[in-house]
Amino acid sequence: MAVAARVKPTDYFTPQEWAPLAARSRWMGLWLVAHAWLTIAAAMALVVLLPNSLTWLLAVMIIGGRQLGLAILMHDGAHGCLHPELKVNDWVGNWLCGAPTNADLPRYRDYHMGHHKYAQQAEDPDLGLSAPFPITRKSLYRKLIRDLTGQTFYKQRIAPSIAAFRDGARKGVPLAKTAAGVLAFWRPFLIFNGLMWAVLILAGLWWVWPALWLVPMATWYPMITRLRNIAEHACIAKDEPDPLRHARTTHAGPIARLFLAPYYVNYHCEHHMFMHVPCWNLPKVHRLLAAKGVTAGMLTAPGYGAVLDLAAGRPAVA
Image (cartoon, rainbow, N blue to C red; front, side, top):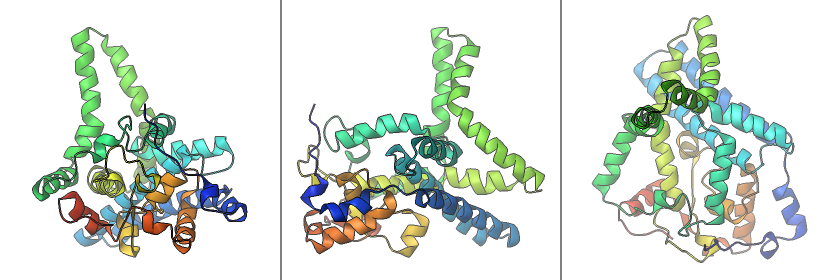
């Protein structure tokens, strides 16, 4: 198996520069998780206080963006970056970041480490996300429409459980055994979301969970997850030998960071180069690399629009 080429921190940083970049914080990761939930609560409150179609649409986009933000913070937890104590890191990453959208940190960690080990190589488990690109603009639009209409959510989240029951029945597996397996898969999601909905019901806001949590999860969140995947690895050569070009860093302004690129996820080339740097230090990594002239050799894009043009067969970005 071809392992992806790696870089060493000492290739680019002095020990004095590297130490603060790699340091774990006892509060920063927890603050970002709290920030995600406070932003979600504020968006929900906006609709409760000013209920109309425009505030609802804005809230769906903001909350879907923070749902992706929680996934990004769980990803940091998979790298052990949320907190210096592993038990705290894993509990926060699993229950406050993963469970709300039915992601599982231990399962994701095993999968994701394979992605880093074999980035853009034949054994990369994420290669299928980037290999189809470039595609036609019509094909890209169809994918985005499927995301926004809930079809992707159904295919990825609901259909596998239905298929498990069908496969179990075909193979003669007792229904109770199949149900137990499906329930185990959904249990963290059901526990967290059941508690969330119960609190909202007691507050007289039963409708907030389906309208302002489930709808973003089924629409905006899948779409921006696709955009994130495209930006990070689409149109990168399979078996790419250069470790500075295994992933793409995309410039994100304030609007992009609010709606589709929260918590420094756009610094993906830096993350692949130094995967144990906490996400909040990636901008510092980028600035230092830029000062040393390294970013000129890295794979970058001026914005998400430019990456979408590339993915739809338009001229390439640097």
